[in-house]
Image 1: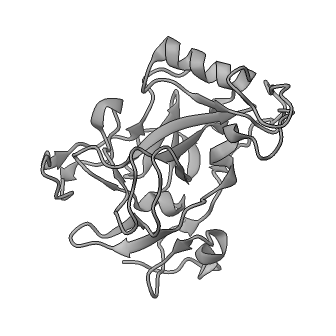
Image 2 (image 1 turned 90 degrees about the vertical axis):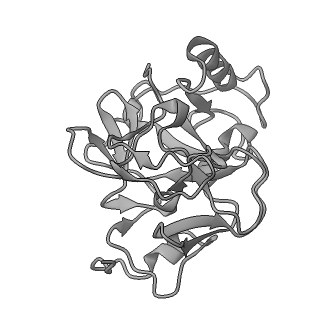
Length: 249
């Protein structure tokens, strides 16, 4: 049953101004737009940045790290290195797309047979940033949760108690229209990595946002019957946690 946490009523609409919520929307979790760390890492440990001026190009050190990661591990094991707070480039740098927050209008809605879902309220071009998957950064001790997403060795982002709009993106056995990227900026500490969602194809207004919970990237969410309704529905999903990386450097 959905209920309002103490001191949390209606805060979601203030935190996500481009997200529409259903009438009388209440939650059984704390809505947040930032990852919650039980122990926040030291932000100056292992930090580094590029020396580019204004916007960055293919010669940017951060861009080159991303290219090297793709060449070394291949998809889906690579990490996207965005420019961060220790970089000398401007705030408008094209390599900071996930750090600007939600830029396209989204809406949480009530689906038929799948509970709540998320759809686009305006067209989203392929490759555009959609949203970040936010929650608690925890050591994975194997406790049951249908909202865990692996970010490193024995580390997960768990959106069961704290989360945001990404929590409502449903599974689709046909692969969906959203793909996952593990993003790091200015830091090598795995606890500061971010799970981000980008448009895998051109998404039309009113189209539901979905991705494959297991797929080729080894992600898992829950053990139960699948109700995605796609033409290629597997009818069953198996419990575990999301994991978009098989190798963590």
